[in-house]
Length: 601
Image 1 (cartoon, rainbow, N blue to C red):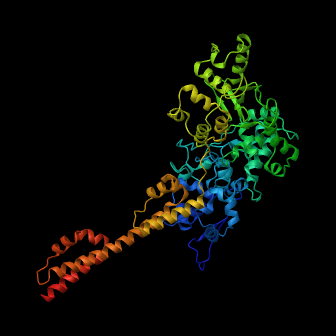
Image 2 (image 1 turned 90 degrees about the vertical axis):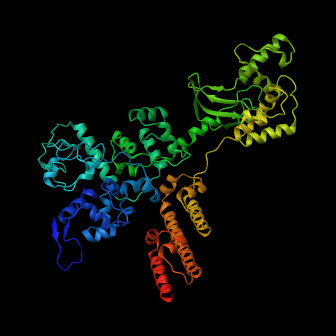
Image 3 (image 1 turned 180 degrees about the vertical axis):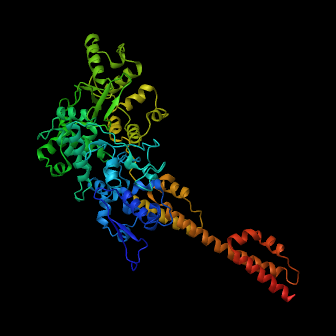
């Protein structure tokens, strides 16, 4: 419906149109621009939040994610007489709003890869009313449920794929001007099951785009999806969930980590995963939103991982905590594939004896450094050879030299096969302190205090040193606080301005210990540029004052002499043409000063 404004109206647009209920924002802006004889980019520029930046067609898709970040919706609503709420409903903002905090929406990636750049359309829909339907832009929507035909993916006349960014008139191909409504429909008989699937997908998307205001955290969404994959049973069953997750090609460990809030960095669940699970379970978003996950299911998710850890015990027979709880701690290594191809998981260490363990593919607990096998070999050799010292025992063929020496040193510092060797307390303390500071073992081995390699190994395999290794695992650097970095950046700029030091992104990024690209990503470059320009103006004013003083000094020195312009510019050390580009008023000052001087002669 088109409504012409009366002449008394002050708006710069004379025609109003009504948006369709399932129309995309770009489509509405394009139609509005066409009816008013202008371009969509011109309208975008008029309502843009930043008039200094010219809108680009390649960025138009951003309007349908976070429109308020780029345009003043209140102005556009006033010009079009369409409410702000209606305009937002024409975008995918409400989808992001359901799964992201407001501050995270602009940089959210949950819709990545879901929005098409190329036009998919139903020619029969175009014939009824020429506008771009929101669902046509969604990857995965391949047919028109209303007309039960597949969507056309290009112009049937010229054969080109139609880029949405190239469209100025929705009714025609932007390359050959063929009327899209005349495209021969690709009629394909859809079976009932496939048609119902497409109808469900459209229903889910229409519900997702509805403003409900109900935010769900990534952890909550992951928990709900696990409950659905668990076929809504009250207790988590890994076999059932794994079977269903495999069908959908969902990485179950990642989903479990999200549900348990076990990830070191914030992560969100991609909308495609949510969509696939809902279609697989044959439910829409309204059902998902009302889904209540039993507390017993949440408990089974939370406690499953802890129960496994709490039930394991140290398996070293010489350990004081042998088959007792309370001595094992996680080392920080979740999984590791070894050179022989074996994959080990859930690495733990015993704080009582220093042994390290992990679980193999069969779920069996294995000792990692050979101490357990070495213990049984030593026990057998001592029994056969009588009361021999550990150093006098021959190395078994299945141990290499360094490994065997390490095992001997390990047991020599523990009262397992006799008295433990006494070590220098000061040297042991120095060793422990170096390890706690993430000291490298090769560097410690180079200390000049060691009498021999064995001397080093005795300290290397002492329980205090081995525990220090476990507790001093390298930690990830803390993530930067944006507010703190912004305060530091402003303080640095102010300090450089006061001390007349060059202000640049490179210098600021170096002092903040981040990259220049990070500075730009954070948006700090605008502020830095402003302060740099301020510094430039301040320096120019100081230089102009210095040049004026130099000019006055020249005339004082050349009193009663004929003065040429070139002599003045040579004295102040700057070309007239350059001075005219940076401070033309100084050229005027020099001319007036020279004329005044000549009139006195």
